[in-house]
Length: 544
Image 1 (cartoon, rainbow, N blue to C red):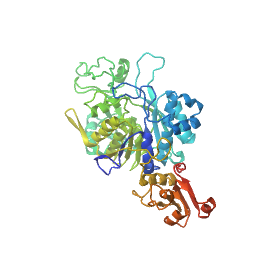
Image 2: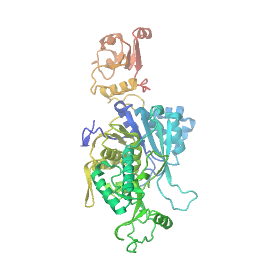
Image 3: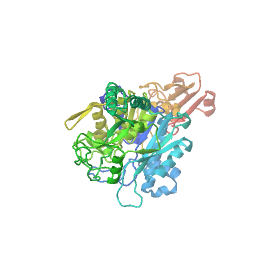
Image 4: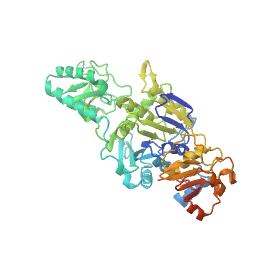
């Protein structure tokens, strides 16, 4: 049950604290087959992915018990003899494999999954996806250029990857279109009209400014494109500024005053020769005098109109974004993904009330991206986030989404909220104990939801089932004998199928499936009754 709520209680958004393997198992009966898009940013296995409570890096940490009987058995069967001496690489693969298997079960038939990764585990992750999702469902790989590396090296590493796979590629539309494309087309048409009708630049800008002010509220994501010239409608972006560590230092002279323009706090992003080229091309915008920071001219016609396999965005922007939300912390979170990256993926692949899942939620970028997109385009997307570390889940993931949802202060400025909200829950117990047996604390209702989903692949309609007859699916009745549901009326506390107990079950004229701990009825009689018995917990398998 949710522990707390923030904002709109009916938003449908959920943040779960707990190991994502356990969290996914708990969420499967509720969200299986319903998620449109999954984005994950798993540990890159660099050896420096995580920090401990003292701030020291110690690699990624997951609670998978490699020494447990079922894990050792799985390793021996699936990974092979080399599992006896697990390396960091092998452990990473063993961590990812069961999580990807579960994530696939959450996707709708037309669902897709994105996964960020770098060179260290790219090949391995791609092979895992090929095995679990199938090569035929590989949609593509995005190369994300996210930094400029000026350190001496043989090959400068300046990019990462985003893998994309489908639940069933045949169910995807032939073309992904961003919700912003219609606005872009309209804006470009208006720009051409203003250029054609007004040869005088001053008059053209005045007429466009009037139109822009009347329509600004409908122009997302082009609400800042308030200028026009012979090349069309454009805006100024501070993409010439270095967003992270110290950049380049040199003077850029103001064309009117002749004085050096104020330099960005962290210097310029480009070397001086690149800046000279941008100046020659007329791509640099100046303020009225040298006290205003220069900006890069970006035309609306150059705005991305397709989900390209090449994507350029400075990854250090993500650090600046979260620092702005948590000004009280010098290092809120290491290597957060930029909001724009997630928005880009979601804007092309989700709409309406689609569910977006992130099982490695970390800093909560995915949650903010969903709220930001909904605010901009009026859709009703919902998110489900899971984060294993309690300190991060509560103090970073949930707190970030709360602040951007309700609004927060940045210096003297008040940043308005994006709206929405979320419920927050914790994973209290696993369905199965370490020895593979059912956890004794699991209630009938919890087991019923799990059994029904495993058998049918659909969520159980009743939130509080109180009968051994869980329901009828495609003509077959599904029964569960567990936790004394029949008030100990028969052998084994009502969990063993016997002839007297069978007479106590709610009737069904068609075929039946009964889950229980044992069956004392002869197989030939079961066949005559059109009844299939499945033993708990060994025959709990997810329906395909």
